Length: 131
Ligand SMILES: [Zn+2]
Image (tube, rainbow, N blue to C red; front, side, top):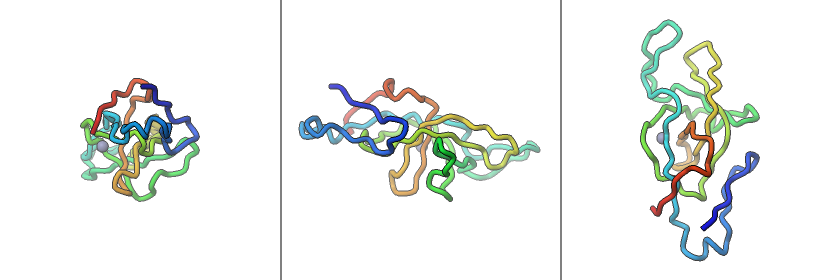
């Protein structure tokens, strides 16, 4: 079984209909939600920041992804439907002056406003399974 992968400029993975018709709609990526630090990071002064979503997340073109919905590492493997929304972009800790510009692939729109990020930028290496 060969899945095509989203191109940089595409936001929605569109499975081949012939393949989808064979009952693969339940296929999920094992999405490693590993980017950045978890909540409770420190700011430039070394003071702890008690925010579970300390990162702002941006598309490659600089447009914020789901403005108002920050990101903090879950540190777990999510089952992300392969027909979900995957976007290349980057993220920045909003509590530090530095522009971390951490390159990530964003998985969003899970429940409408959740943001998850991985630093594994090669989607062809992502494992898949059935949900
Ligand atoms: Zn996550």
